[in-house]
Length: 178
Image 1: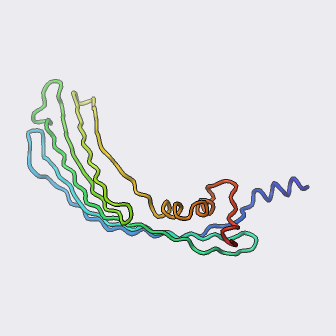
Image 2 (image 1 turned 180 degrees about the vertical axis):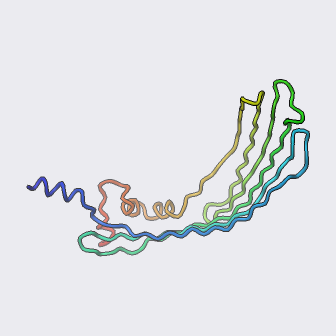
Image 3 (image 1 turned 135 degrees about the vertical axis):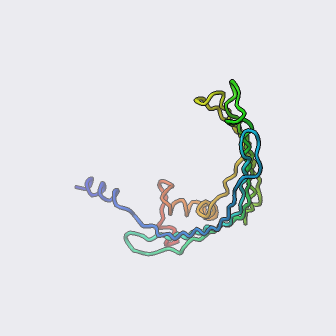
């Protein structure tokens, strides 16, 4: 009987998380043709973006129903981005062994409220020797800034990891009743 009780207690949660998240974003994008090449129209796109992410998490004990204080974090960023796509070879000027050739270049500049700035370019080529074979290649850089939950975990250390029930063997009760 004690083994069954231990099994049942092991299956029941020891607490509950309550969280609030808010994500706000404003984005403006424009695109269109710039000029024509023998392979087709060169197109350009660009835009700007602003975003804010905030989170608050609290833990409630399943036995006592005691609720801990909300742990809060937020991040925000601004960005500008652009891309140009240039069809060098297309239907109008294709030749044997060169059905299509398209080059593209893009870039994104981000300014994070806490992590600084970053610029990430990308260059790509799409080559079609015949209409049924496509070969693509690209090079670029990228950066993913920590979001509000990442930031909150870093600030609170094991407490938030424990609250999110990611770390095995931790005791969220110590967070509620320090």
